[in-house]
Image 1 (tube, rainbow, N blue to C red):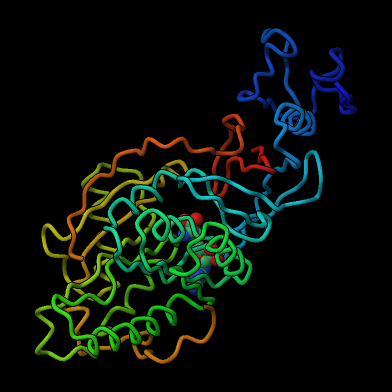
Image 2: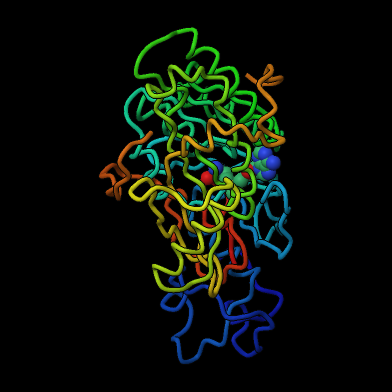
Length: 370
Ligand SMILES: C[S@@+](CC[C@H](N)C(=O)[O-])C[C@H]1O[C@@H](n2cnc3c(N)ncnc32)[C@H](O)[C@@H]1O
């Protein structure tokens, strides 16, 4: 070992009590240091240094602090060991994502969910990703399914990395990136694509097939933008229009399946301004537990015609102008896991820790200790 713990934890000086909390369960420290019965804990700094020593792909080990940026969802972090460099590179579902972890949202625990949603997309469909981050849904859909993707994020750093990740994964020709508020983006992009679809005159006609809305704390509040959003389509051709499948994330209390479904659907319908969704047109799936008694769920539903063609137009639905910056009714089923080997965290071991909010795991270059 090239280092000594000055705080006197188990890893450094056996005689001293460790001032830090007990950590390191995922690091194989027990057999590496002392027998479990004699180990009274390992401090954060030592855990960081051991993590760094054991993982040759890592440059920096960080601890997330309690503060999370409420709008852009990245968290503040302190460096435990290594360089003050937050650029990270992670492989997920066969794509590579590079980003500044101190400025954008990333959560490797969503990798399976990214895959599950893109599995619902058919080859060549048009996908709209409203809260795209650095592109885990968008880049995957463009790469795996050859989709044209309109992807947006309000965080300028996420927008920059989204564009770069499109380029590095060789899909920038199909991935159109925007840096707008989600409401403005949806109104603008829909206005343009409706115009294009009507001019094209094909039948059945599709403006876009999927809309992904992963901002669980407030995605549902954006759903009212769909009220009257497709009213530019002449009545005569509306029967031939296939309205999109929307994948909207929200939080619900941990409860029975039926209670969670009821709560998630209630949030969605109240924002859309309808009493209920048509039976068979929706699916609620639990994505993950984010806190004791709190789950993140996805509601996938076909946009109801009565909302899309409503005479009542929401504030957001007034758009339809130029997008200023940057660049179905399908059956919903449970997606299986894919077989391809996915490198998560550059070979980093499972990290343990409590979760108050999202954004954790291990990326190549950076490991996070809780
Ligand atoms: C929970 S993250 C999801 C990112 C990505 N879809 C993923 O799965 O990793 C939500 C994203 O929404 C962005 N965001 C927050 N408010 C927004 C808004 N009003 N309009 C557009 N994007 C917004 C944040 O910057 C963040 O990148």
